[in-house]
Length: 116
Length: 119
Image 1 (cartoon, each protein chain N blue to C red):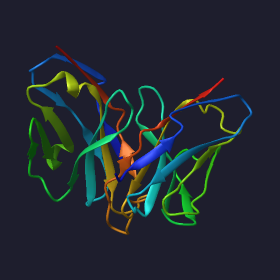
Image 2 (spheres, rainbow over the protein chains, first blue to last red):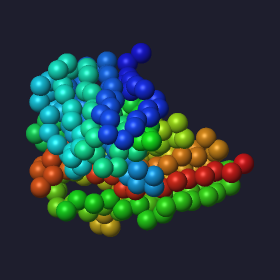
Image 3 (cartoon, rainbow over the protein chains, first blue to last red):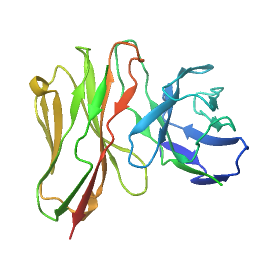
């Protein structure tokens, strides 16, 4: 079945450690996104990528890093520089983020990160 | 600046009641898109509808209906004859076609409305 997978579902990290969240899609979508969700809040964009080997910062990129070496994969690393990393992280993808077209974003099941 | 406001933080209804979730947006763009997503307790966001700014026709899909009014910058969502399975957090989102300081195509989310449907 086509879709977006995120792993792991739950992740625990000690302070000072980097951790990488996985996001894979088999929808053949060009664009991929990472969002952070805090309790009672909407989603905030961390990073996005329109094509392989290219990505841009979103609204809250500080303390995070990404790579896009393959079309189907967009891993997110939460670094020790992120002051408050405990949150729910959602990955999404869309067909293409064209110049004047907004395509629907489809979301993965999310990863809940807790810093101990 | 672009903004989405969902003033209702939480709503609780009894099964079979109708319920309307409000969404008000702000944008300088003339071409934009509005979305509704459902987030059940499992956490995954489920896409419900997308609307472009040139199409003000109301839409109905089963028990769901959407009322888009540009004059009031609103895109409200109504569930008719609610069911327990409708319990979730519902998000309204806006995306602009052109870049006005943000990046075109990126979603701006409201804070969500938590709907509880009791049997």
